[in-house]
Length: 443
Picture 1 (cartoon, rainbow, N blue to C red):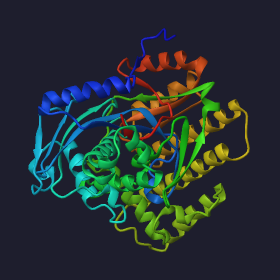
Picture 2 (cartoon, rainbow, N blue to C red):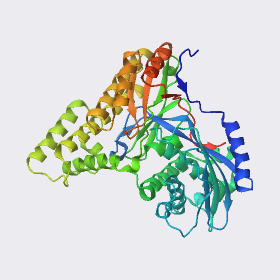
Picture 3 (cartoon, rainbow, N blue to C red):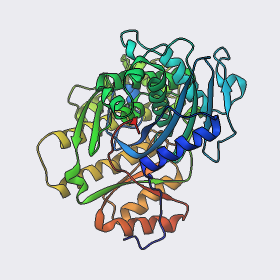
């Protein structure tokens, strides 16, 4: 029983939210929705700023996410509306030949929706069951239970929910399968293809430098399981962590400071890490480490970087110190991911020992986000320090940084103490249970 004034953000009941959204769709578009689709956000235990470098990431899909009600059109017109009170400006019409919504000064979130539509139209011809028919357009109504800009992948959740809605209303797969049958027809292979569709939408149409972690977690997560994603080839393994969750909880805490991946700072950090990779002669920094990396491998790679800099190596105009810090974050974050992967898939340990080891790695991850990736901020640093002092087993900033959320690992009998201590920092903080949940689906 919660006896403090912590503000908890619940995920809501999917069936009730779906029914309400379908009803609202009829009111908004004066026609019935053909269905409602849902895609979850994600919390990432480890692996920030390394998906685009081929590192291993360890996300979980959340119960919170984005719901999309949709119905097909045959005139190529895309009509979209969000019910988010801070973003809603009524129905926005995007014509088939209009170009990017950004060029028409439409709200930025519409580019994510439009980008998914464009990306689906360019889908791999091998997967003809996902191809949208000629002249396809759609009416789309959106509602999210995720806080926007909280580092919980609200943008990827939107992309993935829209992708399912468009496939569900405009493709052969959607024509042949409806409702739960549609969800069952989405094999892991098709989900991987759709993840790439959404990645392309964000990188090519939105202009954000995602590496694919968020979209993969949303489309390929699993209830009760942590996903171990190898971003070299996007293969996944899923670890049942129910043994850990019997005594511990993962909790995401929204800092109240929103972030925006397309504002340039994330791109700058990525560019500095890519300059370090180029100097080392690798395409992705994961190539600079052996298959089973250890701490001496990280140290040797940093020494090689220093040698190349001393010899006048080209960093494309980027500051050498900044590039080295980005390099150190990426390499040590990869090492932490491999340690957690080995912990979960290797020899069994006791619950408390496993939690303590994960907690130590989370704390190390936050330090690296603060000192080497340099994407943390004062509120997050104070939250991590306060949570650990109050008895949290682990705490770290998650997401792209410059805002977002802190992820906690807390023994159940310490939850009230930890949340109370954090609420004393700010009563505006919001808490979400980060429960590993099912992936994107028809509702």
